[in-house]
Structure formats: C-alpha cells, structure tokens
Length: 82
Image (tube, rainbow, N blue to C red; front, side, top):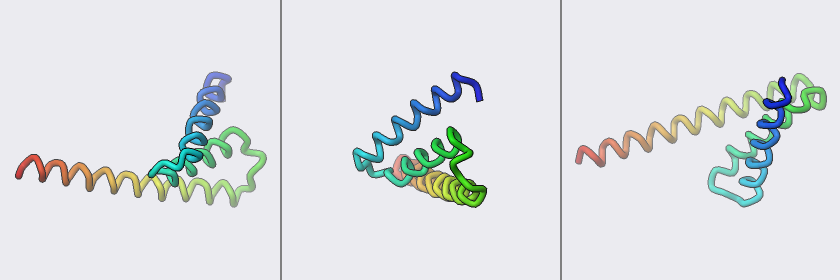
C-alpha cells in the first residue's frame, strides 16, 4: 500500500470508530469496517483464520446492506407508483 492509501484507510478507520462509539443504528456495519481496517493496516497481527473470519463477516454484512437497500428502493418505487 502507498502512504496515501494508508493515510486514507486510517482516516476511514477513525471515522468508523467514531460512528461505533456514537451508537448509530448501523453500528454493526461500522464495527465490521473498523475490524477490516485493522486487518488491512496490520495484517501480521491477525492469523489466517482471523482474516477469513473478518472477510466472511464483511461479505455477510455487505450482503445484508445490499438487501436492505434493495427493499428500500422497491418500497420507494411502489410508493411513487401508488
């Protein structure tokens, strides 16, 4: 990773950590983001098994978010058509 990429990732991690601390409704998403940033910034601190678990949780969370967004979009479209 370049220094610029690392700096952006660290800034994103700080943002995500603040969102977790604030107890926002999407807290689980932000917890996953913090953990993923930690793994990307310090890969040597995690075992291969931990990396697999982090990636699996991130994929599961992303799928959940995509499903939620699709439902919201469908509801909005139905509401506009009604």
